[in-house]
Image 1 (cartoon, chains in turn red, brown, cyan):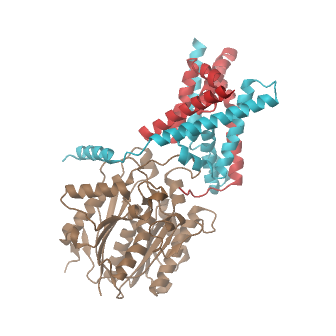
Image 2 (image 1 turned 90 degrees about the vertical axis):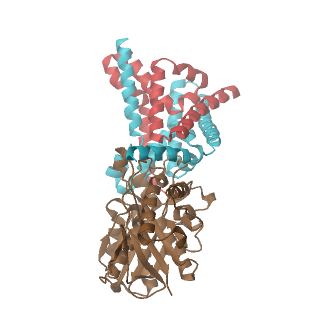
Length: 121
Length: 336
Length: 148
C-alpha cells in the first residue's frame, strides 16, 4: 500500500520535474508545456510504452497531462480496431470526453460564481 | 533665440513650472519603498468598480482631480489635459477625460508617457498657448496583465527577468505661474530596437533607448552626467539599469551614485517582483511623489527624468517582431 | 557597425547578463507538489474502489480525474490555485489540474466581457492548443494503426 503511494509520488513528481526543467531552461509558457506533454503521451501510447507505466504507478501516470494524451491515443487505437476509419475520428475525443466536459462545465460554473482577483505576488 | 538646441532637444526659455502634482498608488506599491511619499494609497484596487478597466479610469480621475486641487486651480483654469495609458486605443485616458470639462490631447508612449506628456505640456505652456495644462498617466496591474499576458488566475510562474506592472496614476500640473520647480528642456527620443524579442525582459529591450536619449540630451545641452543631482530612468528594472550602466560606460559616460531607476526602487526585495516595477504608472507615481517632494525640499536641484517605453503590442509579439523602444527625457530644476 | 551584428552581440551580452537564479529549489517544489497531487488522485481512486467494490480501474480513474478537475476549478475560482502555481511551477501545471486551471482561469477572467463573447469564447485561449494538438496526434496514431 505505502509502496504503491511511493511509486505514484515518484512517477508523478518526476514528470512534473521534467516540466519544470523545461520551464527553467527554455522559459516555455504553460500552454506549450501542456501541448508538448499531451503529444508525448499520445506518441508513447502509440508505441505501447505508456500502459506499463500506468500499471506500475497508477495515478502517478494518469493524473499528469501526459495521461490525457495517452487516453486520446488509446481511444483512437481501440476505436480503429472496432470501427475502422470512423474510429480514427471518434476514438480520441470519446475516450477523453469525461475530462473535457468536466473541465468545461466546472469552468462555466466557477466563472459564474467568482470574479478574478488581483495577484498579491 | 532658437528654442531648439542640438539635434533632439527643445529648450523652454520661459521656464514653465510645476504648480501641482499628485500620485495614487495601489496596495502593493503602498507597501514598497515609497509608501511614505505617495499622497494616496488604495485599500481596494477595484475602487468599488466591477472591472479593472473601470478601476484604472477611477485612478486617473483621482490623480487629475487632486492634482488640480493641489495646484490651487479650478477645472476651468486648466486649458488642456494631456494623457495616455497602456490599454488598447488608450481607453483609460479617453474615458477618464469624460469626467472633466477640459479638452484632451491623447498620447501613446507606452511606459514613457509621463515624460512625453510633460514635454508636450511644457512646450505648449512655454509657447504661450496655454496657461495651465494637466499631464497624467498611469497603469493598473490587473488590466495590463489581462491585455498583455495571461489571465490572473492562471497558475504559472513569472520568469526571473520579468517586472511587475504598477497599479497607480500620477498627474502633474504645468503652468506659466511661477513656482519652485521648473521644466527646463526636453529631449524626444528616437525609436531604438536592438533586436530583443523576449517580452519578459523589457529592461534589456529598453536600455539602449534610454542610452540613446540620455547621450543625445547630454550632447545637446553640453552637460555631463555629474551636472545632475539625479538621473532617473522610468522602468528599466534591476537588470535593465545594470545594462544601461554598461552601455553608457561603453560609450564613455559613467553613471554613478546620481543614477537610479524608478522600477528598481519601487518595491522592496521581500515583495518578490524579480526585476522590479514597470508600467506607465511606475515612473508617474515616483515622479509625482518622491522626486517632486525631494525637489521642493531642495535635496535634488537638477533632475533628468527619462521615462522609457516599449512600443510593442500582443499582435507584433505573436508575429515574432523584436521590441522597438523609446525614451523621452525631461530636465527639471529647482529655482528660487 | 552592421545593425544585425550589433543586435546579435547585444542579445549575447544580455543572455550572459541575466541573473542565474537558484533553480534547484523550484525543481524540488515542482517534484513534491506534482507528486502530492498524483497521490491525492490515487487516494481518491482507492477510496472509490473501496466504496464501490465492483468499479473497474478505468472507471475509477475517470471518476478520480473528474473529481480533481472539479477541485482545481474551485481552487482557481477562489484564487488559490495561482498561488500554488507561483510556488510549484510545473508541479501544478503538468497534472490534469493545471489543464482545469487553464480553462477556468480565462473563463473567470473574461466573464466581464459577457457570457457568450467573454466567458465562453475565451475559455479555450490557453487550453485550446492542447485539445487541438492532442486530437490531431490521436488521429495520426489512429490512422497508423488503421493501416498496420
